[in-house]
Image: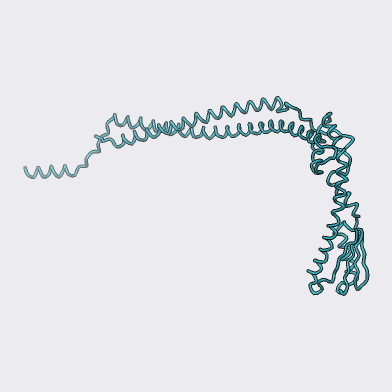
Length: 315
């Protein structure tokens, strides 16, 4: 009897135990929770993609709106600039007390537009002062040459002293009207050919003298610049835009800005369409953002529920 009990105990000890059985209700609950988690995860991913698409659509719509609104503002600003230009011309008195550069700028602005009475009358008034300003600028540049000539003479002396420190002070440049005389006594390093080359280089470097002479141990060397000082003055006034007459008045190619000008009908319709598109994409973005947040909340709930079911005791 005792041997039977021992054999039975050994037999029972050697048999593996069966795994616990999961109740069918718990299996069903876990499957439902897994399905809810997958659905919430998919909804959240779909809403994230929709947010990205809505943001791109919103940026595109806003860019179109911004560009068209900028064109609308530019059209209104063009009218203001046109009116201001004519008012600026009319405000100048008979003495023509105005900066020459500003007068040229006003002419360039108005000359670009089509002919109309206000614009043409303003250009005639611009021409009246153009002659006065051109003469004033001519006198200014003519007087300025005095300082430019003296500065050139000093530069020659300083350059020579820097290149030939042992002979410092030997080169003396003196201005007499529109002539430049350079004395170089006691300096024999420059041979005659080099003396002539230096004089010609000086003439090429300045338009403010009629002639430049170099006097030294090897004799006198002379050159004349390609242009005369009066020619330089005339060319400078022309470059400033004041030399040539502005009448008879010529029509420009641009349409005259008028009060009430704005976008064309087609552009106005396009602006309205893109504003509607911007509002629509903004609503889509808000809806997708809300659904994305809701899907995230549902995902958290499903994860918690599944975790709780997975930790539930099994029979």
